[in-house]
Length: 333
Image 1 (cartoon, rainbow, N blue to C red):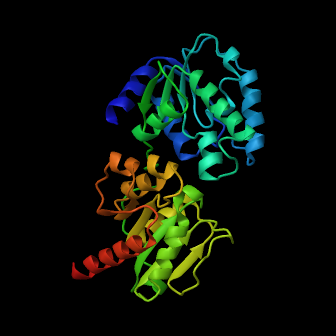
Image 2: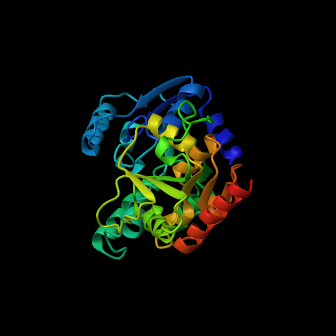
């Protein structure tokens, strides 16, 4: 919410702030938070790493932390993934106020989203403890939606801490409204675009089944952008083009010439789908594109201005019908 963002800005303004994250600097959440620190802090130190492998980034960031004297900093702001920093390095931060962006729960990701461990297993209990310790080590905790913050508070028994919601923001230097012509092969098609990193929470299987359901609608064509693994039943129905990867600049161009964008999340088997707003929502919104969102608590929490429909989580039939409906409205218009 706007008030929470202003609270964060007020906390940072005029302070000496060290920002630490173990993700690459151009990641949407990192660039958003680092920009706030650079803009409002009196002195800003940004500790990140752009090494390709996550293990390499971890060791790179650890080395930088160990070589840094934090005594002069009023605030240590820990971003992605805070569990890898807090509470292991608290001794380095002296009396600085700790702001933590608890963007991802390791426990939630590995037990519910990716289902690698049972919550009751020894690994499940261990990662629950790590998440809980990281949360308790902070003075102020940031989440990406109100409902996600409530989940963290309840699941990990966090009391006496201030929670703030900081919604994601697209990079407006890349994603902005523009006109773009469709390539010749799709000139007469109603283009429906989906992109993602293809994680279970996104419900890509629901999108693929909607494509299959619309195989008898030749004027509707799908652009599926992302590394879809063989475990997914990919329809080869002639109404879809698969693209493994695009640069952000090329992705923006594809979004610009598409007629409709699918945002999600669409899964009804992963709890996080109901608690988080996909980053692509903010990108589509920044570009002024009509979209279909999953009908989740998080998506309902922050309404955007684009022409859009909500689609019931887990229902490929409803998603397909909504796509047909928007195509019909376009033809009437």
